[in-house]
Amino acid sequence: MANREIKFRVWDVTEKVWSTGFLVDICKVFPNNRIVSISQFTGKHDQDGKEIWEGDIIDFDIQEWGGRGNIHVVTWDENSAKWSWGGGITSDMEFRKVIGNIYENPELIPKG
Image (cartoon, rainbow, N blue to C red):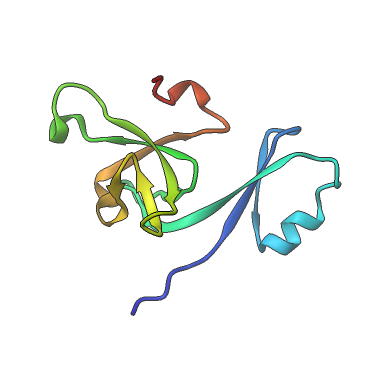
């Protein structure tokens, strides 16, 4: 069984910046009234070798799927207990491209 690297990043809603490192250390630097969102690393990388995190927005290869881009947000699927992107599975994440995330690029999230 392969070991998966477990790491987190925190989005500071007030300052609009990411912090990474040990989760306990990160959370200590934020005042109690500061709003933050925590994302977990999926353990996967996209087609360019970029780390894929919870809340990342990924695009499928237009050539592969035809017509137009197929954009999804990476989430944790409680029912199947694994990372998901619009119903897909993480085993083929290396064929996808991270184009942003829900915090910095909400305009990329598909409507409807």
